[in-house]
Image 1 (cartoon, helix red, strand yellow):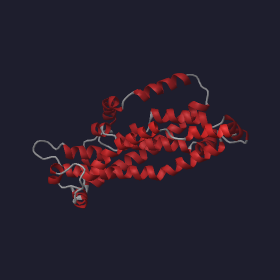
Image 2 (image 1 turned 90 degrees about the vertical axis):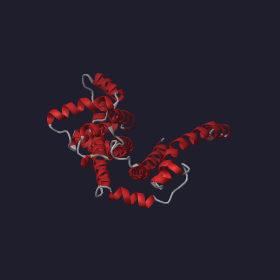
Image 3 (image 1 turned 180 degrees about the vertical axis):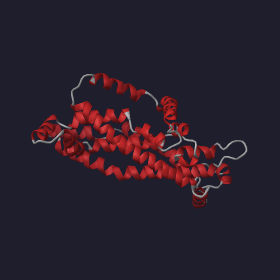
Length: 286
């Protein structure tokens, strides 16, 4: 008993090297965020004439300037981004759940080939698909509309892959067969039995897809021409590259970038409790 406890304690004790790597990784990720926070608090003059990480006194005036730019166009961009990311990631998560469940639990001809094609789709960068998607949507007359950004976001090869892996590992065949024995049809089995068991995996898929759509630049940049339809990424890029006749609005861009990451932080903090609860439940079951 003593030996077992000693071995277990040694395994659970974090190593110095591992802790150092985590600290370096945390610093690497937080330094740009701190820079954005400090830079957004400075005026245009202070931005280039003061120490990089020294705070300024113009944060609230910069936020007011961003809010007042072209009668609140920035907040229109934020609402557009929330629409693209919220609706797109929710529908994409549902599609990924259905496709992953079908590929994990149903036996049909060509399933392995289809899964291999899916894996190949994971490796294809989204930038490569932007122009072919534009040509396709142009023929359908859907360019420069909300659909041009929403529809391509519905299919996520990586999301389907994660859903398939999670269903295979966490949804026993016995539970599905028991539900079918009780008379439940396939749709009810999926809705009432499989989906509740997939919640931890679905939260992960939703977050990945939400962040990907929120940060997406190339697809809306190619698809949209009306700045009232822009997401915040394309809108801020336009402020930074207005052409030779107009100066770049650095303070507006930096302050807008700070405001644009706040919803992502709030979303992670909100959904983090689902991970903690499910991880604790899994530990008890094991």
